[in-house]
Image (cartoon, rainbow over all chains, first blue to last red; front, top):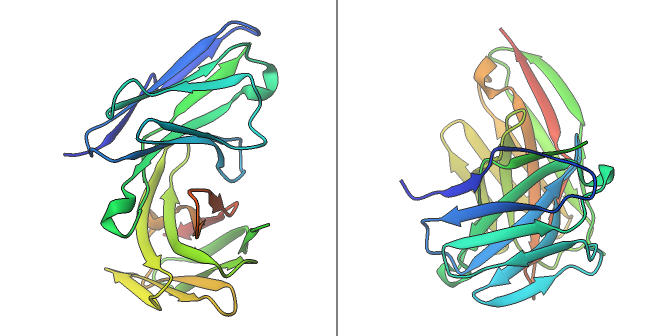
Length: 114
Length: 112
């Protein structure tokens, strides 16, 4: 089945220790998104890639970076995690060319910062 | 600035009841609206997508409607079941960009 995969499902890191979260997709979608979701809150868009074009949201902290080496993979790098970065990180994909741009989400990575 | 509000924040109903979840948005310049389901600690599962030119979409026991002029969408769940217990989120994608704005969700509990 075509899908969005996130690894790891759970990540524990120490305060200030860089961490990388991974997302891959078999849907061949042009657009990949990273969202941050804190407990009982709405998902908040951090940035998205349209093909190789990177689009950062204005209020995304500089501490968050992303890489998309090819169509299938996208990474979220947190350079110096703080306690406030503990959250669920959700990856999603969509294909604007199909006229719907329906978003499909992965299972998420739960990040704990000690 | 687009804002999305979902009311109620939480809802508890007995099994078999028909129910309506509400989503309102402040800017009618949307490309589409999508309803999702989220189980605790999990990702989001797409339920229904309504394009701005459409009025409603149906899938099984679910029916979503869209009224752009009033900035409202509803998700109707027929004959609710305990397995429907989850958080339901709506999200709007504005025209001219890729920013999707989510509501905070309605947490639904269906009692057996």
